[in-house]
Each structure stands twice: as C-alpha cells, then as structure tokens.
Amino acid sequence: MTPRAISGNTLLCLIIGDPIAHSLTPAMHNSAYDAANLNYCMAAAKVSRDDLSKAVGGIRALSIRGVAVTMPHKVSICPMLDALDPVAKTIGAVNTVVNAEGSLTGYNTDWLGIIRPLEKRMTLSGAHIAVLGAGGAAQAAVYACAQSGANVTIFNRTSSKAQLLANRHTAHWEELTASPDMSRFDVIINTTSVGMGDLKGRSPIPGAVFKEHQIIFETIYSPRETQLVKDGLLQGCSIITGEEMFLEQGAAQFELHTGRQAPRLAMKSLLDANAVKTT
Ligand code: ATR
Image (cartoon, rainbow, N blue to C red; front, top):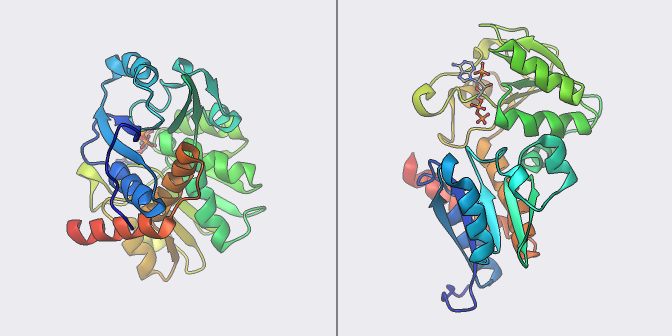
C-alpha cells in the first residue's frame, strides 16, 4: 500500500456536521482510499444549521466529489439537493451526497448499516424486532426492518414520535417504560442516545428483560461496549455493535463516492486501532 500524495488531481470529499471534530469518518475513508490506491482525500467541515445552504453551494462551487452528512443536517439538506434516491426519499433523510458534474444526489446508507449485519445472522422476513427510540437513527432502522418483511414494534419515551414513525412504515408502537416485556422479540435494536455522551454507562432497558436467544443490536459506536452490550453479553445474547453498523454504512458510502468496492478489512483495522486508543 502506497501512501497517497495529495496533488492537483486529488478528488476531495467532506463530512459535514456540527459537532464534527470527534468523527471517525474521515480517518476511516482515508484508510480506505489508501487501501484501494485511490487519489481521493476526505476532511471534516463544521457546518452550523444556519450555514447549510451556503455549504451546499460550496460543494458545487468547489467540485467536492462526495459528502458524508451527519447531525444535524440529515433531514434539512434534502430539499437543497438536485435529486434524491428513492430510499432516501422514503426514509426522509440523507447521509451521503454524490456530486456528478455539479448535480447533487442524496442517498441514505444508514439503513444498510442496519440490514447487512442482521442479514448475515438471520432471516428477517417474519422476525419480530423491537426498535428502541424514534429519532433520526430509528428512521433508518424501522425502514430497513419493515421493508425486509419483519414485524417491527417501536418503543419510545415520547409516544407521539413512536406513533408517527410507526404510521409511516406500518409498524407497531408502545411507550418505553422502565421494564418493558421484550420476551416476544428476536432482535432488540437500540437507537436511543442512552449509553453515550452524558448518558454513558446507562441503558434504555434493564438487562434482566433480555433472553438468551435474542440478538441485541447497539447503534452507538462510542463507547464500543455500552451498558446495553454488557447486559446482552451477560445474558448470553448475540451482539451486533454500533461499530459494525458504522463500518457498513461507511462502506456503502465509499462505494457511492468512488464507484469501487469498499476495502472493509482496512476500514475495520482503522476502527480497531482507534478503539484500542480510546478504551
Ligand atoms: P438520533 O438522531 O441520534 O436518533 P434524536 O433524534 O435526538 O437522535 O433521538 C434520540 C432518541 O433517544 C429519541 O428517541 C429519544 O426519545 P424522545 O423521543 O422521548 O426524546 C431517546 N432518548 C434520549 N434520551 C433518553 C432517555 N433518557 N430515556 C429514553 N429515551 C431517550
């Protein structure tokens, strides 16, 4: 593997969001460009809500090849683009933009980060899946599972948000209580923010409700082992970590930006090295 030399021909990609300094996306994509020997480079740009439309103009003006979009812009960027992929339109959120000679198309690869790890382990059609949370991450999770024929129930602290999301995707909903009955589910996906930031060390539901046969899917990737993951391991459940989801959505994003197959091993090595540094 030869390290890339940035030159006049280097194609530029960006991740935009606020906050953005913590993001592992540039490091993961740059390691993938190195492994695939591509003359690309990704940097991070902090873009406030108020500056989003100027930033979208900048993507066109500066011929930025591809953009990764993160909080808080995934929904508000949609009407600023020239076209939306049908899946991004249905989910109502974009995490990837491709610039084809000034025409910007928005895609959503977050749902692939949900579906691909699950499909490796089970048949989704007819499965019973609980999605904890009804925010941005839940949109992609509910879409992913519902379109695969799974029976989805959304649990959220604020019932009205669960109800809205359930109606959009023909799912069921319940209020998230302190100790909900989870026994009928094959998979429990956490899309709430409980377990990260100020809520690090906490879990949205007690580990005692897990059953050994269940798959516990955490969408938080930092910390690597949330309380929910620890509880799932303790109960003998199978675990899908947020890192696996992060890798899959990023691999699909790389493929849209470059048209090449993603070097998953290199991307995973970068995440492993980072986890060693931060734990
Ligand atoms: P994201 O886009 O990352 O999903 P979000 O849209 O802010 O972020 O959604 C956060 C989710 O975590 C929501 O479902 C939120 O529940 P509410 O809709 O009731 O706000 C959930 N959440 C955040 N803090 C929580 C807590 N302490 N207990 C339970 N759920 C919580």
